Image 1 (cartoon, helix red, strand yellow):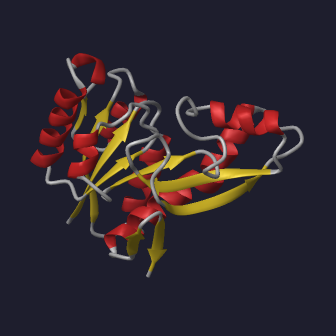
Image 2 (image 1 turned 135 degrees about the vertical axis):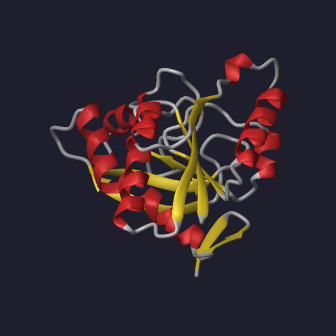
Length: 207
């Protein structure tokens, strides 16, 4: 069985998309071994509970240093023998030790077409606000491997989503989730499970 460790900070809609794809058979042979939240009040923890998935809050603010936080995460995922770490709306910055331990085994979904509207401070509704302020005609979502800086790792998949003239940040956020994020994240997991992602420097080749 291929084991995922899913990291969350909020409502857990991307977590739910993964759960649904496992139940449908799209992610055959895959299970979510554990869910880790950065916030104890994240609704994603309730989603995990409803689906009998072990879930815990490991908050960075409860550790004296980045190294201690990394160590706690490494020990936790090690106990569950996790094959792939999936950031599904996870807002805390991961440390160097954790990233090095799971090098090219951590993926993140970001609600824009990187390199647009990404980097530090661009999370949640903000990328959609920025897209509307800038007046772009298309936005979208990106799944990428995680590196030391926010939204900086090699890109795995991207999908464009049309921006409508009457969009609000909230309506655009929902469309990007429905049309891009919920599709791309399970697809990237499937490609990883099948051994079809080859990282070559800044690029990811799909074989």
